[in-house]
Amino acid sequence: MLKTVRVFRLGLLLLIAVALALGFSWLNRTAGMRYVNSGAWHYPGRMGELTDEERQWAEVAWRYFKNNTQAGTGLINASDNRPVTSLWQIGDSLIALTAARQLGLVDEVEFDDRLTRMLATLNQLPLTGLKTPNLLYNTATAAMVDYSNKPATLGWSAQDIARLMTGLRIVALWHPTYSEYLDRIILRWNFCNVVDNNGQLLRGGMRDGKLTPQPEGRLGYSEYGAAALALWGFPSEKSVTPPYQSVIVDGIAIDVDARDPRTTYTPSVVTNTPYVLGGLEYGWETPGNDTTLLTAQRQRAQNIYRVQEQRWQKLKILTARDEYNLNAAPWHVYDTIFGNGYAWNTLGDDSNFYPTRALVSTRAVFGLWTLWDTDFTDALMAMTRLTRDNQRGWFEGRFEATGGYNRMITLTTNAMVLEALMYKSNYGPLIRSLPQESYFTTRLSDVFNPPRLCMPQERKPGGPKP
Image 1 (cartoon, rainbow, N blue to C red):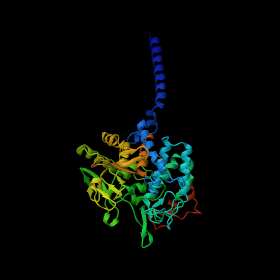
Image 2: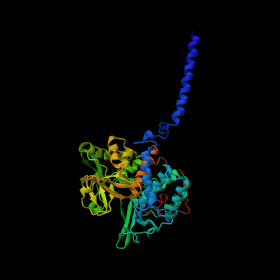
Image 3: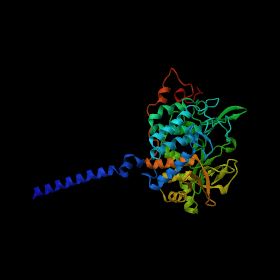
Image 4: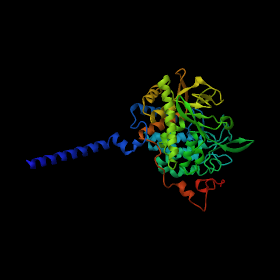
């Protein structure tokens, strides 16, 4: 009898072992195991393979890039059929192309062709007299232009430069074969007037006929730009901790920039974009940054989400605020959670208040929907999922006051759609590590032939410019 029991137990254990082996073999092929293997439990939001509808969303966004690519330069128009772009939007383009490859919207040959044309252009991009990239470029010729697309030197923006550097880093991480040529792009630029040794971001503009640098950055964008530069080893301390104060919006503490926009000539606004990008790209956990700062950034993003969700819960107003473009005056709008002293303020570039122009922003909806899996973001997406032209791309959004579309179609909004869907498909942020060695680090390690362009290894923290 005892022997029979032992044989039964042994047989049962064997059956359990076989079942577990089969189970793990099956699980290893499922989304669940991919979720576990990717470490996605560390990150918020929606994870997993795209549904058929989500894939259609990605295809619509990619159609914008197909329609607006300039064959000669590889650059993408910043808005539909308008041949001008900024460095921020070139960074968007690089991230969108990476997403398109990872989502299977382009094959290896098309990816290589598109990236190669962009690399060739960016490695020969005309620079200002101080060897910084200009604010704007014509996409057909790559010439420096002004806001009317006429040849001109406008100056530079450290925040835009930082966005492009993020795009370069993301392409290199996902496609390291191209890393040397990506690194060469920024090794042409002089960073002495882009970020100082204390980590203050700088912008430049014409003053009395001379390019003059001055501090740049507002809470949110300041930290995002500083984190991007820090990925390449540049100092970030001052811009990563800008002065701020807390205001109460509908009972929730929202941090806002403490500097007076009347003296800085930069609007003090709180929108979704910098916080959403921080979540999508590095999960608010940039390598090398202080843990306290990372906690603060994550909490700020959470509070910005909560105040919009609460507005919907209490007032039944779908809310997803961001800056956006219009095809009529005032042309560019800061649609804010808090702006220039007021909650839910909608400001034009002319500093006037446009309450009827408040928008459910498509780019904000996709970021919020991806990073927060809730009834609120489901409601946002239900209203946004058709805010598009299937042959041209996604619209900027839907006006709160009327429900009508803002039919402007831009590069940045369509890039956000692709970036958000890549995050979902990737089970988390696009940047999770940094290369230990690259052409960039090797070139800067040559102590006998330094670039002398205020690169990271040429600086002394807190000291004068090199």
